Image 1 (cartoon, rainbow, N blue to C red):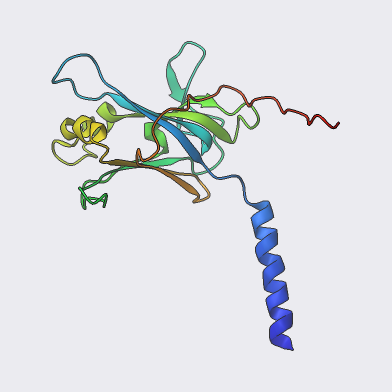
Image 2: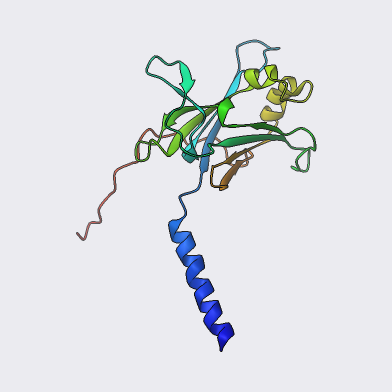
Length: 186
């Protein structure tokens, strides 16, 4: 009898915890930005989606990066992994960008102090900080084009979203939520 009472309490605690949790991140698009030229190294990536924790930097009204003073939690982390031919992560090739290396490009209009919709990870700055393994950025463009890159966005609360280009970038990021459509019967 006690076991049944405990399991009922456990179920309600689980449901209550789920109701309190914030929405998790969702990646819609990852874009590699590099200058023109055959030997050009990628400069940065942008990640678009919904419910990302804020980056440690933000673009101001003059389109310049500055410290994000709105951030009130641990911020977002972006992990970048190379994949082998079997789509498994290649050991010792992971690069992890912490919140101070990530720029918030577009906040979420519904929760601007909590979430954003677009992030930028500056690969050139990460390389200058010696965070990346040797020749990592040189190989990034080739691996990205060959669909051998995995991007993981980890929010401050530990929820994560993974992009591995198994779903093509066909959905453009939206600046606003589309309006709700009422049913015909109303």
